[in-house]
Amino acid sequence: MTIKTKTSLKSYFETGDKPTQAEFANLIDTFYRDSLLAIATAAETDKTGIIEIQASALVTALPVGAVGRQLISVAATASARMALGITSAAGTILDASTTAAARQALNIETDSFSVFIEEPQNKTYVLDLKAAYPYTISWVAVKTSAGSVICNHQIEGVSITNMSAVTAGSTEQTASAGGANSVALGNTYQVVLTGNSTAADLSMTIAYQRTG
Image (cartoon, rainbow, N blue to C red; front, side, top):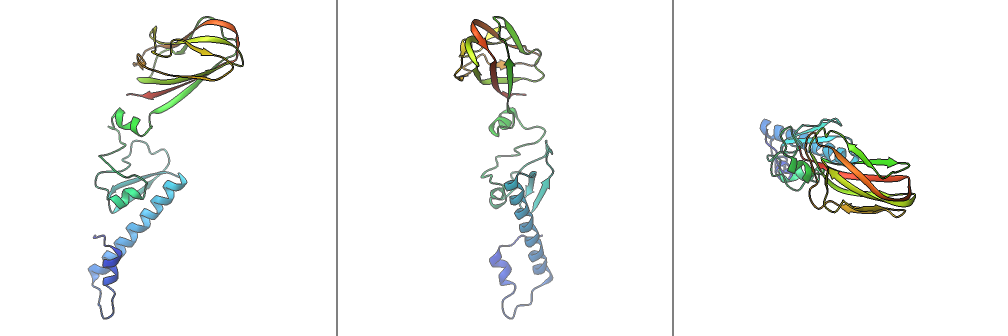
């Protein structure tokens, strides 16, 4: 199979030409590949599934949830990558052995969870008793419906830098972790509340990235 440019294909059918079997094969193969790229583009635009490009001439539309499959490989041509809006491929972007750094670069492992405490007290609240996988805390957002309380986020009893005294009040506050924010497998992540001043309806959102 040989993929040809439109100019090359048109040259097969100029006045007086007699296209060969191989030239007809090139026409069909190129048309088939271009049709698949069009499908890939539509699928990416409509977010209906994951598109797999293993080489310049092979495009496969995968169903939603096909995690762990190769998304794009170094063999994909620039035009094939552009069909997915991907400008470069330094290697396999997503497969079973993809590094944590690569997953983080794609925001694949970025997530968050929220906590609501209707009547917060001056005590320790465990947010993750035994981490099922390692991750790093990125930031926390806090707010109350009334009153205020100070939130000290800790991993194994050690305060997270820049998140040890986050005051939650009626105006939303956000704090980004500056260090000591790595949760290892099996670690406990908790928040210690102090300085409660008639706080009510404490809401917290914690953003994190998986590291393993």
